Length: 124
Image 1 (cartoon, rainbow, N blue to C red):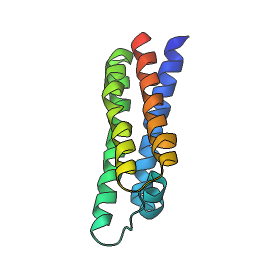
Image 2: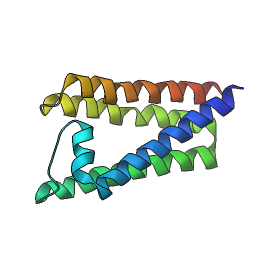
Image 3: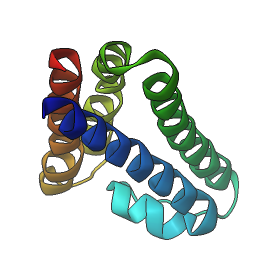
């Protein structure tokens, strides 16, 4: 029973981060605002928003690939490493004028869910 839940949560998280990455390509200003550190896609900031989108898409694809080709335990280890991203995002939002609500309510909460997913995968 644990394995379908663990795998399902991991797949959901991977698909969500791919969706978030796609938003940075399609509607970068709105995606940046939702991230918690608004930026305009005009000028140099546009390149950084694209980099952010690519980073997110890549993270999701890697997560799906590890899960599909290596299994639950390696995917759990990968999720432990992936948790660094939302933890870092928490700090980025706080250091750049974002609100504590976004930093902790979105990014830190995401890190907690990713760590729960890692624990479930490692236990499966």
